[in-house]
Image (tube, rainbow, N blue to C red):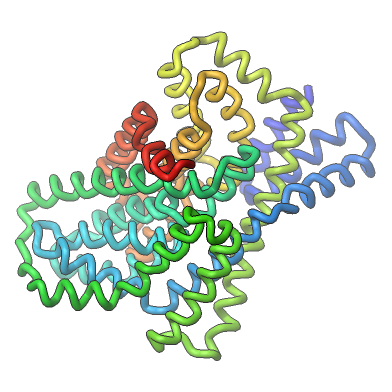
Length: 428
């Protein structure tokens, strides 16, 4: 009975336009009210929300958000675009490759797909249109490539998965994301190459070695952040939370060196970071309360039994889980989806002998697709808004990139070595 109320109230609230965080929290409260009186129900939900946020690892999120905001304002995107253009700008459809490579670099540095889509779309949109790219195709490239930064570390969502899974190593997850993230970018570039060949896009001028080195030197301080953060975590110099604080300090120094952020700009950057952090933390708090209710009702155990009764084949179970997550990603934001469905599906895959680190990469890569789909796809709406087009017009050019992302998901799902080789190399 309680399970039915939880699902129905959540779906109804979401359907009438209530924000996801409030839908999760209210459906959790309604479910508790069926079992116990009002005061204990409200107290229990509040307690579970507070307990869910009482985690040292979660301190990394506001720091990485702040670092991302500084990177977004500090001229990082322009330098990464210039560097990427010297590498691939001479190829047919070169600006599409530039967008994808810059998104992989900027998204990894900022840790935000929305920030990557906004920054790169604003800077590349007009330039791509002048060179013969349609607004819709440019937006499709920008939207899908922006999500690669959620797989390539440092990534806030991987930290959330570590929390939801009960302590999977953040360092292992960060290392595990590199190859799948790069692979996804390569698949997207392949689609862009086919489009460029079909449209017979002109070939640009090949950059001289001197220009490549010059653009690399300009972008090097930004790229060095990845080495400092990931290298420090893997070497055991600091934890992921401490690394996030180091990233903020590094970004602060870097933005002043670039002279694109002044002291008077800092209050606005801090306020913007606080707003983003508050939204994420509210989602985490309400999602943790719903996860507790589901555990109390033995939902994960029941789903494990149901899935294992369907088949004992890992291939079949992973296919079913991927299909469910693809459906969930269409209607739910990534953070609550990770917090709610990790406790449900992780026991299933571990029962089949699957590594939790590998499953984390599969889950995040899967839900990245949902960020590019209506009605909840935040990256889709940002990309469309920046490009000045509509969702209806972008759907057709978006479909081949969707297929590329799904193909990447299939490859990563059934070839665990792609996720586990790097962590294994470092003994994680």
